[in-house]
Length: 102
Image 1 (cartoon, rainbow, N blue to C red):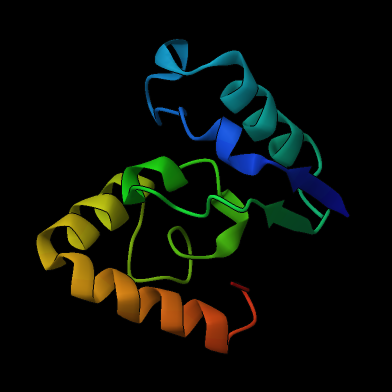
Image 2: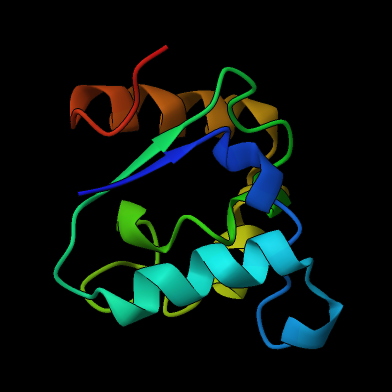
C-alpha cells in the first residue's frame, strides 16, 4: 500500500510535458509506475481544487484502459466542457464506489 499524505502537493504534474512538472509530482508518478501492483491511498484535506490537478491520480481508474477516457487529457477536456455540476456528479460516483471520502 502506498499512502500519499498531503497528495495535493503533487498537483503540478503535466502529462506529456513531464519536464514542466514539479519534482514532487514527478516522484509521485514514478513511485506509482515502479509499483504497478501496489494499491494507492491519496490523502488530502484540500481535495481537488481544480480538475486539472488530478493528473497524478493515475490509480483512480477515471481514465485509461477500461474507461470512457483514453487519457487524462481526454478526461480533463470532458470535465471542463461539462462544468461544475458534472464534477459534483463525479464526486458522488466516486463516493459511491468507495474511491472518495469527504
